[in-house]
Length: 217
Length: 237
Image (cartoon, rainbow over all chains, first blue to last red):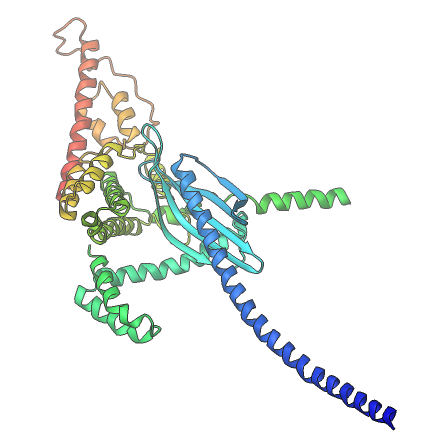
Protein backbone atom coordinates (compact mmCIF):
# COMPACT_ATOMS: atom_id res chain seq x y z
CA UNK A 1 0.00 0.00 0.00
CA UNK A 2 2.79 2.35 0.99
CA UNK A 3 4.70 1.47 -2.12
CA UNK A 4 1.69 2.30 -4.28
CA UNK A 5 1.23 5.70 -2.57
CA UNK A 6 4.90 6.50 -3.10
CA UNK A 7 4.65 5.65 -6.81
CA UNK A 8 1.58 7.88 -7.16
CA UNK A 9 3.43 10.79 -5.56
CA UNK A 10 6.39 10.24 -7.84
CA UNK A 11 4.09 10.22 -10.83
CA UNK A 12 2.46 13.49 -9.77
CA UNK A 13 5.88 15.05 -9.21
CA UNK A 14 7.05 13.97 -12.64
CA UNK A 15 3.90 15.37 -14.29
CA UNK A 16 4.34 18.64 -12.40
CA UNK A 17 7.97 18.92 -13.40
CA UNK A 18 7.17 18.17 -17.01
CA UNK A 19 4.31 20.66 -16.91
CA UNK A 20 6.48 23.35 -15.42
CA UNK A 21 9.21 22.72 -17.93
CA UNK A 22 6.69 22.77 -20.76
CA UNK A 23 5.43 26.19 -19.64
CA UNK A 24 8.59 27.82 -18.39
CA UNK A 25 10.90 26.88 -21.24
CA UNK A 26 8.78 28.53 -23.98
CA UNK A 27 8.26 31.58 -21.75
CA UNK A 28 11.98 31.85 -21.14
CA UNK A 29 12.63 31.36 -24.83
CA UNK A 30 10.14 34.08 -25.70
CA UNK A 31 11.67 36.47 -23.19
CA UNK A 32 15.15 35.70 -24.43
CA UNK A 33 14.03 36.37 -27.98
CA UNK A 34 12.55 39.71 -26.95
CA UNK A 35 15.78 40.64 -25.25
CA UNK A 36 17.79 39.53 -28.24
CA UNK A 37 15.77 41.61 -30.68
CA UNK A 38 16.28 44.70 -28.50
CA UNK A 39 19.94 43.91 -28.23
CA UNK A 40 20.14 43.29 -31.95
CA UNK A 41 18.53 46.64 -32.63
CA UNK A 42 20.90 48.39 -30.26
CA UNK A 43 23.86 46.71 -31.93
CA UNK A 44 22.54 47.69 -35.33
CA UNK A 45 22.32 51.36 -34.35
CA UNK A 46 25.72 51.17 -32.73
CA UNK A 47 27.24 49.65 -35.86
CA UNK A 48 25.54 52.24 -38.05
CA UNK A 49 26.98 55.06 -35.97
CA UNK A 50 30.36 53.43 -35.82
CA UNK A 51 30.42 53.02 -39.61
CA UNK A 52 29.56 56.70 -40.11
CA UNK A 53 32.09 58.00 -37.61
CA UNK A 54 34.79 55.76 -39.05
CA UNK A 55 34.08 57.09 -42.54
CA UNK A 56 34.23 60.65 -41.18
CA UNK A 57 37.59 59.84 -39.63
CA UNK A 58 38.72 58.71 -43.06
CA UNK A 59 37.51 61.96 -44.56
CA UNK A 60 39.40 63.96 -41.91
CA UNK A 61 42.49 61.90 -42.63
CA UNK A 62 42.10 62.90 -46.29
CA UNK A 63 42.02 66.59 -45.38
CA UNK A 64 45.12 66.12 -43.21
CA UNK A 65 46.97 64.47 -46.07
CA UNK A 66 46.11 67.31 -48.41
CA UNK A 67 47.12 69.88 -45.79
CA UNK A 68 50.40 68.04 -45.40
CA UNK A 69 51.09 68.71 -49.09
CA UNK A 70 50.65 65.13 -50.26
CA UNK A 71 49.57 65.51 -53.85
CA UNK A 72 48.11 63.48 -56.66
CA UNK A 73 46.06 60.29 -56.73
CA UNK A 74 46.06 58.48 -53.40
CA UNK A 75 44.27 55.28 -52.53
CA UNK A 76 44.48 53.81 -49.05
CA UNK A 77 42.52 50.81 -47.92
CA UNK A 78 42.07 49.10 -44.58
CA UNK A 79 43.33 52.04 -42.52
CA UNK A 80 42.67 51.21 -38.91
CA UNK A 81 41.20 53.65 -36.46
CA UNK A 82 40.75 51.80 -33.21
CA UNK A 83 39.32 48.43 -34.16
CA UNK A 84 37.57 49.66 -37.27
CA UNK A 85 38.91 50.30 -40.74
CA UNK A 86 38.25 52.92 -43.39
CA UNK A 87 39.26 53.38 -47.00
CA UNK A 88 40.29 56.69 -48.46
CA UNK A 89 40.69 57.75 -52.06
CA UNK A 90 41.81 61.15 -53.29
CA UNK A 91 41.21 61.58 -56.99
CA UNK A 92 42.50 64.67 -58.77
CA UNK A 93 39.82 66.05 -61.07
CA UNK A 94 41.46 69.17 -62.43
CA UNK A 95 42.91 72.59 -61.79
CA UNK A 96 41.59 75.87 -60.48
CA UNK A 97 42.48 79.36 -61.62
CA UNK A 98 45.34 79.64 -59.11
CA UNK A 99 46.77 76.32 -60.25
CA UNK A 100 45.26 74.72 -57.16
CA UNK A 101 44.54 71.00 -57.43
CA UNK A 102 40.92 69.96 -57.29
CA UNK A 103 40.02 66.55 -55.91
CA UNK A 104 37.21 64.19 -55.26
CA UNK A 105 37.73 63.09 -51.69
CA UNK A 106 36.13 59.70 -51.04
CA UNK A 107 36.07 57.90 -47.71
CA UNK A 108 34.19 54.76 -46.84
CA UNK A 109 33.74 52.29 -44.05
CA UNK A 110 32.08 48.91 -43.76
CA UNK A 111 31.10 47.13 -40.57
CA UNK A 112 29.27 43.84 -41.12
CA UNK A 113 26.37 44.75 -43.43
CA UNK A 114 26.59 48.49 -42.90
CA UNK A 115 28.23 50.67 -45.51
CA UNK A 116 28.84 54.37 -45.42
CA UNK A 117 30.62 56.40 -48.07
CA UNK A 118 31.37 60.12 -48.12
CA UNK A 119 32.17 62.08 -51.22
CA UNK A 120 33.30 65.69 -51.16
CA UNK A 121 35.22 68.19 -53.21
CA UNK A 122 38.55 69.51 -52.03
CA UNK A 123 40.76 72.33 -53.25
CA UNK A 124 44.43 72.05 -52.43
CA UNK A 125 46.32 75.30 -52.95
CA UNK A 126 50.02 75.50 -53.58
CA UNK A 127 52.19 76.21 -50.58
CA UNK A 128 54.37 79.29 -50.59
CA UNK A 129 56.93 78.45 -49.40
CA UNK A 130 55.96 75.47 -47.25
CA UNK A 131 53.05 73.51 -45.73
CA UNK A 132 50.53 73.54 -44.12
CA UNK A 133 48.61 73.92 -47.31
CA UNK A 134 45.32 75.76 -47.56
CA UNK A 135 42.63 73.17 -48.21
CA UNK A 136 38.98 74.01 -48.79
CA UNK A 137 36.46 71.19 -48.71
CA UNK A 138 32.82 71.53 -49.63
CA UNK A 139 29.63 69.90 -50.81
CA UNK A 140 29.83 66.77 -48.69
CA UNK A 141 27.57 63.99 -49.89
CA UNK A 142 27.04 60.59 -48.32
CA UNK A 143 25.40 57.30 -49.11
CA UNK A 144 24.78 53.95 -47.47
CA UNK A 145 25.01 52.14 -50.79
CA UNK A 146 27.90 49.65 -50.89
CA UNK A 147 30.08 51.54 -53.36
CA UNK A 148 33.75 50.66 -53.79
CA UNK A 149 35.48 54.01 -53.76
CA UNK A 150 38.62 52.80 -55.53
CA UNK A 151 36.78 51.57 -58.62
CA UNK A 152 36.12 53.92 -61.48
CA UNK A 153 32.68 52.52 -62.30
CA UNK A 154 31.44 52.93 -58.74
CA UNK A 155 32.87 56.43 -58.45
CA UNK A 156 31.12 57.34 -61.69
CA UNK A 157 27.83 56.13 -60.23
CA UNK A 158 28.42 58.14 -57.07
CA UNK A 159 29.33 61.15 -59.16
CA UNK A 160 26.06 60.90 -61.07
CA UNK A 161 23.96 60.35 -57.95
CA UNK A 162 25.65 63.28 -56.28
CA UNK A 163 25.19 65.36 -59.42
CA UNK A 164 21.42 64.92 -59.20
CA UNK A 165 21.51 66.09 -55.58
CA UNK A 166 23.76 69.00 -56.51
CA UNK A 167 21.22 70.13 -59.08
CA UNK A 168 18.64 70.21 -56.30
CA UNK A 169 21.12 72.06 -54.13
CA UNK A 170 21.58 74.58 -56.93
CA UNK A 171 17.83 75.12 -56.98
CA UNK A 172 17.86 75.58 -53.20
CA UNK A 173 20.68 78.10 -53.50
CA UNK A 174 18.76 79.99 -56.15
CA UNK A 175 15.68 80.08 -53.95
CA UNK A 176 17.74 81.13 -50.94
CA UNK A 177 19.40 83.89 -52.94
CA UNK A 178 16.22 85.31 -54.42
CA UNK A 179 13.97 85.15 -51.33
CA UNK A 180 13.82 88.16 -49.02
CA UNK A 181 14.81 87.47 -45.37
CA UNK A 182 11.21 87.80 -44.13
CA UNK A 183 9.87 85.58 -46.94
CA UNK A 184 12.59 83.01 -46.28
CA UNK A 185 11.99 83.12 -42.53
CA UNK A 186 8.21 82.73 -42.78
CA UNK A 187 8.45 79.85 -45.28
CA UNK A 188 10.97 78.04 -43.11
CA UNK A 189 8.87 78.61 -39.99
CA UNK A 190 5.85 77.12 -41.76
CA UNK A 191 7.76 73.86 -42.15
CA UNK A 192 7.84 73.20 -38.40
CA UNK A 193 4.77 70.99 -38.79
CA UNK A 194 6.82 68.54 -40.82
CA UNK A 195 9.42 68.12 -38.07
CA UNK A 196 9.59 65.56 -35.27
CA UNK A 197 7.97 66.96 -32.13
CA UNK A 198 11.32 67.03 -30.29
CA UNK A 199 12.71 69.57 -32.75
CA UNK A 200 9.73 71.90 -32.88
CA UNK A 201 10.59 74.01 -29.76
CA UNK A 202 14.08 74.75 -31.16
CA UNK A 203 12.90 75.50 -34.68
CA UNK A 204 12.37 79.30 -34.30
CA UNK A 205 15.96 79.73 -33.15
CA UNK A 206 17.23 77.52 -35.98
CA UNK A 207 15.20 79.52 -38.49
CA UNK A 208 16.71 82.72 -37.07
CA UNK A 209 20.22 81.37 -37.61
CA UNK A 210 19.41 80.07 -41.09
CA UNK A 211 17.98 83.45 -42.05
CA UNK A 212 21.08 85.27 -40.85
CA UNK A 213 23.27 82.84 -42.85
CA UNK A 214 21.11 83.09 -45.95
CA UNK A 215 22.78 83.78 -49.28
CA UNK A 216 22.40 87.46 -50.06
CA UNK A 217 24.44 88.28 -53.08
CA UNK B 1 43.00 28.68 -71.98
CA UNK B 2 43.70 29.38 -68.31
CA UNK B 3 46.37 31.89 -69.29
CA UNK B 4 43.93 33.63 -71.59
CA UNK B 5 41.32 33.84 -68.86
CA UNK B 6 43.93 35.15 -66.44
CA UNK B 7 44.98 37.77 -68.97
CA UNK B 8 41.37 38.88 -69.48
CA UNK B 9 40.92 39.06 -65.71
CA UNK B 10 44.04 41.18 -65.30
CA UNK B 11 42.93 43.55 -68.08
CA UNK B 12 39.45 43.79 -66.58
CA UNK B 13 40.83 44.59 -63.12
CA UNK B 14 43.16 47.15 -64.68
CA UNK B 15 40.28 48.83 -66.47
CA UNK B 16 38.04 48.94 -63.43
CA UNK B 17 40.75 50.23 -61.10
CA UNK B 18 41.83 53.15 -63.27
CA UNK B 19 41.62 56.42 -61.45
CA UNK B 20 39.02 58.79 -62.81
CA UNK B 21 40.71 61.58 -64.67
CA UNK B 22 39.15 64.93 -65.29
CA UNK B 23 36.65 64.60 -68.09
CA UNK B 24 37.57 66.74 -71.01
CA UNK B 25 34.60 68.64 -72.40
CA UNK B 26 33.06 67.46 -75.67
CA UNK B 27 33.46 69.54 -78.79
CA UNK B 28 30.00 71.05 -78.42
CA UNK B 29 30.67 71.77 -74.77
CA UNK B 30 33.89 73.55 -75.67
CA UNK B 31 31.97 75.71 -78.12
CA UNK B 32 29.53 76.71 -75.39
CA UNK B 33 32.28 77.87 -73.03
CA UNK B 34 32.55 81.64 -72.60
CA UNK B 35 36.00 83.10 -72.04
CA UNK B 36 35.46 85.68 -69.34
CA UNK B 37 38.09 88.26 -68.42
CA UNK B 38 40.52 86.19 -66.31
CA UNK B 39 40.82 89.04 -63.81
CA UNK B 40 37.16 88.58 -62.84
CA UNK B 41 37.72 84.89 -62.18
CA UNK B 42 40.91 85.53 -60.22
CA UNK B 43 39.22 88.16 -58.09
CA UNK B 44 36.34 85.79 -57.38
CA UNK B 45 38.66 82.94 -56.36
CA UNK B 46 40.77 85.27 -54.22
CA UNK B 47 37.65 86.59 -52.53
CA UNK B 48 36.26 83.22 -51.49
CA UNK B 49 39.72 82.00 -50.50
CA UNK B 50 40.24 84.97 -48.14
CA UNK B 51 36.65 84.76 -46.87
CA UNK B 52 37.23 81.11 -46.08
CA UNK B 53 40.37 82.01 -44.15
CA UNK B 54 38.41 84.56 -42.09
CA UNK B 55 35.64 82.04 -41.39
CA UNK B 56 37.96 79.20 -40.34
CA UNK B 57 40.02 81.52 -38.13
CA UNK B 58 36.86 82.57 -36.30
CA UNK B 59 35.74 78.96 -36.03
CA UNK B 60 39.00 77.97 -34.35
CA UNK B 61 38.95 80.92 -31.98
CA UNK B 62 37.99 80.49 -28.33
CA UNK B 63 37.21 84.19 -27.88
CA UNK B 64 33.41 84.52 -27.58
CA UNK B 65 33.52 87.93 -29.26
CA UNK B 66 35.23 86.48 -32.32
CA UNK B 67 32.98 83.44 -32.35
CA UNK B 68 29.90 85.63 -32.26
CA UNK B 69 30.86 86.79 -35.76
CA UNK B 70 31.08 83.28 -37.11
CA UNK B 71 27.68 83.27 -38.77
CA UNK B 72 28.31 86.50 -40.63
CA UNK B 73 31.75 85.36 -41.76
CA UNK B 74 30.33 82.08 -42.95
CA UNK B 75 27.69 83.96 -44.88
CA UNK B 76 30.41 86.05 -46.56
CA UNK B 77 32.25 82.89 -47.60
CA UNK B 78 29.06 81.29 -48.91
CA UNK B 79 28.21 84.43 -50.86
CA UNK B 80 31.71 84.67 -52.32
CA UNK B 81 31.75 81.03 -53.40
CA UNK B 82 28.20 81.23 -54.77
CA UNK B 83 29.24 84.22 -56.89
CA UNK B 84 32.19 82.26 -58.26
CA UNK B 85 30.00 79.24 -58.95
CA UNK B 86 27.55 81.45 -60.78
CA UNK B 87 30.35 82.70 -63.01
CA UNK B 88 31.35 79.11 -63.80
CA UNK B 89 27.74 78.28 -64.56
CA UNK B 90 27.30 81.27 -66.82
CA UNK B 91 30.53 80.47 -68.65
CA UNK B 92 29.63 76.75 -68.93
CA UNK B 93 32.74 75.79 -66.99
CA UNK B 94 30.79 73.73 -64.46
CA UNK B 95 28.42 70.78 -64.65
CA UNK B 96 27.27 69.23 -61.39
CA UNK B 97 27.64 65.62 -62.45
CA UNK B 98 31.16 66.07 -63.83
CA UNK B 99 34.44 66.45 -61.96
CA UNK B 100 35.43 70.09 -61.66
CA UNK B 101 38.28 71.33 -63.84
CA UNK B 102 37.47 74.99 -64.52
CA UNK B 103 40.97 76.10 -65.54
CA UNK B 104 41.35 73.01 -67.72
CA UNK B 105 38.04 73.66 -69.47
CA UNK B 106 38.88 77.35 -69.87
CA UNK B 107 42.16 76.33 -71.47
CA UNK B 108 40.39 73.98 -73.86
CA UNK B 109 38.40 76.88 -75.25
CA UNK B 110 41.40 79.22 -75.14
CA UNK B 111 43.39 76.67 -77.09
CA UNK B 112 40.62 76.32 -79.64
CA UNK B 113 40.23 80.03 -80.24
CA UNK B 114 43.81 81.23 -79.80
CA UNK B 115 45.84 78.09 -80.28
CA UNK B 116 47.50 78.01 -76.85
CA UNK B 117 46.70 77.86 -73.14
CA UNK B 118 46.74 80.66 -70.64
CA UNK B 119 49.50 80.70 -68.01
CA UNK B 120 47.71 80.70 -64.68
CA UNK B 121 49.39 82.14 -61.62
CA UNK B 122 50.26 79.63 -58.91
CA UNK B 123 49.47 81.27 -55.59
CA UNK B 124 47.75 80.83 -52.25
CA UNK B 125 48.08 84.50 -51.16
CA UNK B 126 49.80 83.49 -47.95
CA UNK B 127 50.69 87.01 -46.85
CA UNK B 128 47.19 88.41 -47.35
CA UNK B 129 45.68 85.41 -45.62
CA UNK B 130 47.97 86.03 -42.65
CA UNK B 131 46.73 89.64 -42.51
CA UNK B 132 43.10 88.50 -42.63
CA UNK B 133 43.81 86.01 -39.87
CA UNK B 134 45.34 88.71 -37.71
CA UNK B 135 42.37 91.00 -38.29
CA UNK B 136 39.91 88.31 -37.21
CA UNK B 137 41.97 87.54 -34.09
CA UNK B 138 42.10 91.24 -33.22
CA UNK B 139 38.32 91.38 -33.26
CA UNK B 140 37.69 93.24 -36.53
CA UNK B 141 34.06 93.33 -37.58
CA UNK B 142 32.88 91.25 -40.57
CA UNK B 143 32.26 94.50 -42.49
CA UNK B 144 35.84 95.65 -41.90
CA UNK B 145 37.16 92.25 -42.96
CA UNK B 146 35.01 92.30 -46.08
CA UNK B 147 36.27 95.79 -46.98
CA UNK B 148 39.87 94.71 -46.37
CA UNK B 149 39.47 91.64 -48.58
CA UNK B 150 37.91 93.70 -51.36
CA UNK B 151 40.77 96.20 -51.16
CA UNK B 152 43.30 93.37 -51.46
CA UNK B 153 41.78 91.72 -54.52
CA UNK B 154 44.02 91.83 -57.57
CA UNK B 155 43.56 94.83 -59.84
CA UNK B 156 45.61 93.42 -62.69
CA UNK B 157 45.45 89.87 -64.06
CA UNK B 158 47.80 87.61 -62.16
CA UNK B 159 47.88 85.11 -65.00
CA UNK B 160 49.49 85.83 -68.35
CA UNK B 161 48.59 85.34 -71.97
CA UNK B 162 51.73 83.80 -73.45
CA UNK B 163 50.49 84.60 -76.92
CA UNK B 164 50.59 88.33 -76.28
CA UNK B 165 54.17 88.11 -75.13
CA UNK B 166 55.42 85.92 -77.98
CA UNK B 167 53.67 87.88 -80.69
CA UNK B 168 54.97 91.16 -79.34
CA UNK B 169 58.51 89.87 -79.36
CA UNK B 170 58.01 88.53 -82.86
CA UNK B 171 56.75 91.82 -84.23
CA UNK B 172 59.24 94.10 -82.60
CA UNK B 173 60.11 96.01 -85.72
CA UNK B 174 56.57 96.48 -87.00
CA UNK B 175 54.03 98.98 -85.79
CA UNK B 176 52.80 98.87 -82.20
CA UNK B 177 49.11 98.56 -83.09
CA UNK B 178 49.71 95.25 -84.85
CA UNK B 179 51.06 93.73 -81.64
CA UNK B 180 47.83 94.40 -79.79
CA UNK B 181 45.54 93.15 -82.50
CA UNK B 182 47.52 90.00 -83.22
CA UNK B 183 46.82 88.31 -79.90
CA UNK B 184 45.72 85.22 -81.81
CA UNK B 185 47.61 82.02 -82.41
CA UNK B 186 51.32 81.99 -81.64
CA UNK B 187 52.70 80.14 -84.57
CA UNK B 188 52.53 82.56 -87.51
CA UNK B 189 56.22 82.75 -88.38
CA UNK B 190 57.51 86.29 -88.22
CA UNK B 191 58.04 87.66 -91.68
CA UNK B 192 61.55 88.86 -92.34
CA UNK B 193 61.74 92.62 -91.79
CA UNK B 194 61.58 94.45 -95.08
CA UNK B 195 64.91 96.16 -95.45
CA UNK B 196 63.57 98.83 -97.77
CA UNK B 197 61.03 100.52 -95.49
CA UNK B 198 63.29 101.16 -92.54
CA UNK B 199 66.12 103.35 -93.83
CA UNK B 200 64.05 106.32 -95.01
CA UNK B 201 64.89 108.78 -92.19
CA UNK B 202 68.06 107.02 -90.92
CA UNK B 203 69.21 109.58 -88.40
CA UNK B 204 71.69 107.20 -86.74
CA UNK B 205 74.21 104.84 -88.21
CA UNK B 206 73.16 101.84 -86.05
CA UNK B 207 69.49 102.67 -86.13
CA UNK B 208 68.19 99.12 -86.59
CA UNK B 209 69.55 97.83 -83.29
CA UNK B 210 68.43 100.90 -81.41
CA UNK B 211 65.02 100.71 -83.02
CA UNK B 212 64.55 97.08 -82.02
CA UNK B 213 65.53 97.78 -78.43
CA UNK B 214 63.18 100.74 -78.26
CA UNK B 215 60.52 98.61 -79.83
CA UNK B 216 60.88 96.05 -77.07
CA UNK B 217 60.54 98.70 -74.44
CA UNK B 218 57.50 100.21 -76.08
CA UNK B 219 55.81 96.89 -76.37
CA UNK B 220 56.54 96.03 -72.78
CA UNK B 221 54.90 99.23 -71.70
CA UNK B 222 51.99 98.43 -73.99
CA UNK B 223 51.51 95.16 -72.22
CA UNK B 224 51.21 96.91 -68.93
CA UNK B 225 48.84 99.41 -70.48
CA UNK B 226 46.68 96.59 -71.68
CA UNK B 227 46.59 95.12 -68.24
CA UNK B 228 45.65 98.48 -66.87
CA UNK B 229 42.89 98.62 -69.41
CA UNK B 230 41.56 95.31 -68.16
CA UNK B 231 41.71 96.62 -64.65
CA UNK B 232 39.62 99.53 -65.73
CA UNK B 233 37.05 97.16 -67.12
CA UNK B 234 37.00 95.27 -63.91
CA UNK B 235 36.66 98.41 -61.97
CA UNK B 236 33.58 99.20 -63.98
CA UNK B 237 32.21 95.79 -63.14
